[in-house]
Length: 147
Image (cartoon, rainbow, N blue to C red):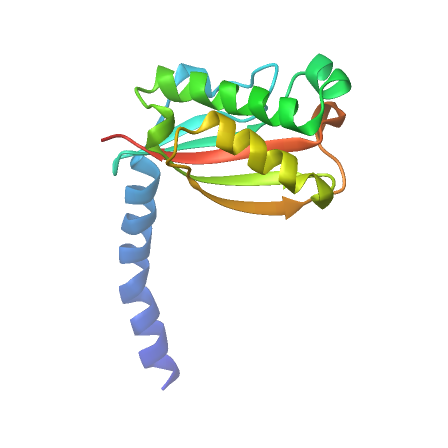
């Protein structure tokens, strides 16, 4: 019985290796993937035309002087700029994850989303965290699609 498990495992390994290779080869990295002043993360595009925008947060001045709604709008503007470089518009953003240092700030985030998105907003998940870069109150990552 131990022999058949070994034979089965050996038969599966090449398929797993090929699958991992295919997954890795479907990710396109851009020069813009380098860390920026506002994010240590970049943009990734899958062959499926999905675009991933990671970890955007306001600059130190906005984080220090702006309220949560202003910070959220600043971050959404950064995402809009990154999306535009990739040929996407705000309506092409399908999903966002919002990280908040205080969950009581959710109403301000909702107001910023209502002001930023013209009717059609992406789905949103909100996660409470203890601390964010630049002592920001909000950080947002997004997923969009090329149409």
